[in-house]
Length: 108
Image (cartoon, helix red, strand yellow):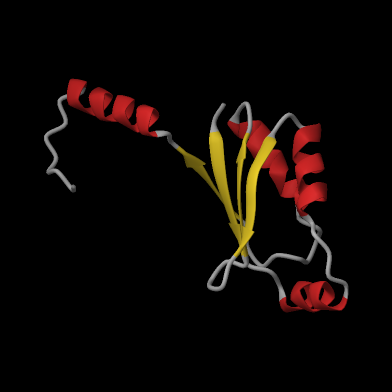
């Protein structure tokens, strides 16, 4: 199943609400994803540009897009979803590039 990385910075109001009422939001995020056929792999919180980073799998890109529903209105300033490729998928992409006659330089 395809995997996705989600990155989001919280708004100041959301951070204030979380400090006022601490709780583990992982179970509710997991349940929301499972309702649409996706599976949460990890939900982590960071110090930096993005406050929350999640990795989940979903059967397709349109299902992955439904993941937007897990963000309550006004809680995040931005939202970025990135499709992740496994090592095997990336190797296959390299082979297809080779077969297409790509002559680019190696980037290491």
